[in-house]
Structures are given as C-alpha cells and as structure tokens.
Length: 257
Ligand code: FES
Image (cartoon, rainbow, N blue to C red; front, top):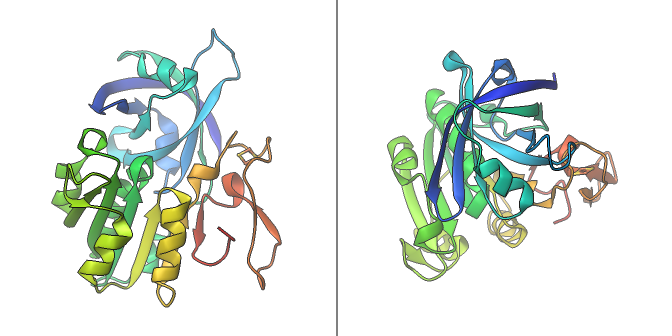
C-alpha cells in the first residue's frame, strides 16, 4: 500500500563523484521490496511539489530504515544532497512493481547487470536472492572509476565484475562485451540501467528468462505526467503501459524498448 510519511535522515554521505547514499528511517520501510522506488519531496521551501523518484538501494526492516543512492545533478537532487542527519523529508512510497525474487529457485544462479545509477536497486535484490540460497553474479558498468561504488558490498554477496568506458576500473568497454567474453551460465538475469544496455542484453539472452527495470524512462513517478508511457510488444494484454505504475520492472520482451 502506498503511504506518505515524514522520514528522518539517519545517514548521508558522498560515496562516489556526485553520488550520494542516504538512509532514512520510518514505518513505510516495512512494505518495501527490491526494484520499487520512492517519491521524495526535496524541499518545502523552493517548490512544495518538487519531488524526485529515486530507487530503493537497500532495506533494513529490523531498524525501520532504507537506503537510496542518487546522483546530485539538478536542483532537486542537489537540495537533497544538502540534508543533514536529523532532518526530515516527505516520502511517498513504496511505488511501482519490483523484481520478482522468486523467479530463481534455491540453488540456482542469477545474473545481475547494472549500469550507472541503475546499479543501486540490484543491491537489495542481490541481498534477497542470497537469502533465498540463490548464487548471484554481478556485472556493473560505470563511466569511469570515480563514479563507481559499492564494490565491497557486492563482492560480499557474490562474484562481481566492474566495467568502465575507459578501463579505469575493471574491464574496458560495455558490459555486453564482457558478458560475451565470460559466457556465464545462469538461470535468470535481472538488469537496470540505460536503455541501449537493456536492449543489448534482451537480444543477447533471447532464450533466457530475464527482468529489466526501465526506471530511466520515468518522469513524475506518480502517474501524472504521461512521460513514461511505453508501447508493448504484440500479444501482450495491454498496448501501452506506464513505467511508473505498471513497472518499472517488466519481464524481458513485454515492453518495446
Ligand atoms: Fe509521470 Fe509515469 S512518470 S506518468
């Protein structure tokens, strides 16, 4: 159920260039699942309605806390990055449909492929898959080393590969180049990141079961702007879907990308 709550900032730090990790405390954490997102009102003063959709990076239900990782790149997220411990922010969520963790059986292997700011939701997903007894392999792409984050966190959960455009960290090139080389064996793939990456993965693993998060295509995040409308492929029940409310996660092949 979607709720609105004033949540308290319990941690805020810059973990890579212009990339911030913020932990918030409140009750709505209990309803969250990996791949969902929240809509955060960044300021009461500037524009009261200025909100930003941000994906959930990790959920700590015992402590009533959850963590987001976001890039400070515009007015809204810059304001958010200045919040201090103890400040309150207005959060609407959890929103959207997340990744189905039950798509892989215990003992199976999941491949998690992320690009840039699409990497954060894969962290909670990996935690939950590991808790189910699923082996996870992570392939994470970033522009350069200075934008990369969470190496220790992902490595603790499974085999982890980094890919950068210039080779400053890990493999040089696209994540799909590395995947081509690795020829990994897995049961299901999950991915979040830029559309060209999702497109390339979907055709590369045509015969595999896979789930992609199209959160990059989101605007308002709450069904009001229609910026996220996407056409579906033939044979689907609906002709169009809204990424924010029908997604952001879809099974591979459902949405034309
Ligand atoms: Fe605005 Fe979906 S993002 S309607």
